[in-house]
Length: 432
Image 1 (cartoon, rainbow, N blue to C red):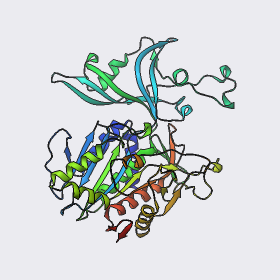
Image 2: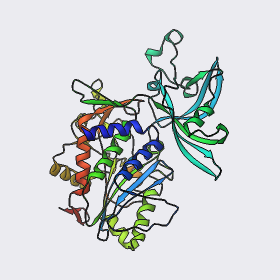
Image 3: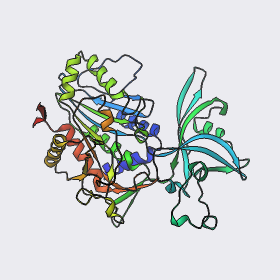
Image 4: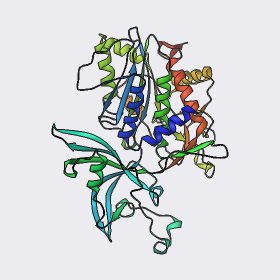
């Protein structure tokens, strides 16, 4: 129960990628990890624990073995979710003040209508010493995107094409209300509104993670994709025992929902740069790094689609996972997922030994699915990879649904991945 609540608390805290990263850092520091800065020299010690951030929205943490690194076990997830990014404030229309927003990622647009929203993210503030970043999240029911009444749109229930520029702009308040800049200044620690230079802000649903069902078997929350995997893999990482030969790595990258093509995303160099600096600081060579990559194993953890009870025809009849029935291995013939026969077999054997049920996900042959961060991270890290996740409903809705039992399955599976003694004995050959 503590593990489940810990994941739900992470979902509540992660109202923006920057808040999710801050929550991860808080948990890492509480567990004794030392913060590093990319802009500073690193002096690392065998057996020690460290973490580093990039852009304030991506985090990498690692536990070094006492012996020279021979392999790495890496679990990756992402911090972002589809939302609306705030472009401008103070737009005046029909006696109201609106925020002007732009879509981030592929969301179910209608799910954002008629629900309490707030703003969350970071602002950049001018100080006497220079500039600094501060997190902000207005803890109040601040905004709404109202539907158009059915009297003005009689065909709304027959299908609707939403225009985000017209239909999905949030109301902030009435004319003459408190200025948005004043509200941000208060949330940013009481600075002057004129000291706020710019921002990265998104809309966030006000709903907290809640359990539902006769015995609380399911839960609903914003940002289940992918903070459920981020929080679950982090819990596993913090709980796992060490390995004398393998470095244990946990990562939460950003911008997966828009292609990962940023310096803090999977197509950036964050992971490769960090691991390269680790090896260099420990006096290891480029050849040592290449050998360790070949002997490593990476989990790309990002949720998958459960069979929808009202629309089972959307799932492949033989490869459709269901909620509360175990960790999902994701496969795709076009290599949108990194899973292959060897990595799937290795992970299945780890889960079998840990007593964790495993399910399989593959799309219908006539229904293409989305991609994730694993195959993009593979551009810069030559390690065997596997795509996993948990089964959920309403992916990319403002509020999604998933199974409570699966949280425990994920934590147990990834903990076993980190601490089960296995080694690569050759290309495609592993020994326990």
